Image (tube, rainbow, N blue to C red; front, side):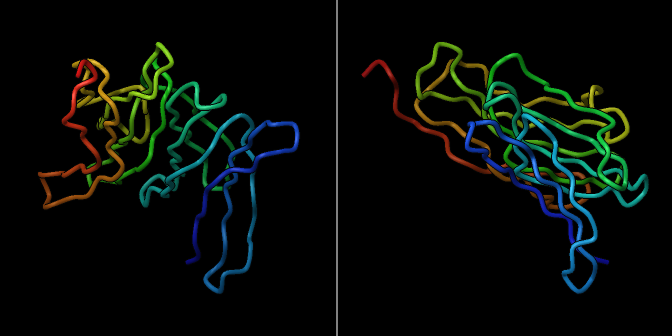
Length: 169
């Protein structure tokens, strides 16, 4: 029983740490971990392996981030799928030992534009990707995938914002 919570702490110095908090079934804190230079936005614990998967960003929004910990919050994997900066906004645990992460990537030229992504990866090895829906058709104004949900055992839906205006007028 209990809950897993993630988020982040911003220090007076401007540095950030991902907060991973485990509670018991009554809401009492069981343990907490801080993961430096990362921000957590979504979390789940795999029922088979007991690994904890966190999605977010690291190094000041420089890279999308998937963090995998053991059952008590010790980091065993930390990595980014893309070379662009961005943010993983949601995670979806699948029944087949896989997960889906979604979010958005920042324009590498520094504008406010973004492009959405979603990809399926293996929980035991997040470097193995089974599909990737990154929309690299150029950066438009605001394009974000911010949630993923199963429709049934074989279909996943991702939702968010897709700006249909163009930057060229």
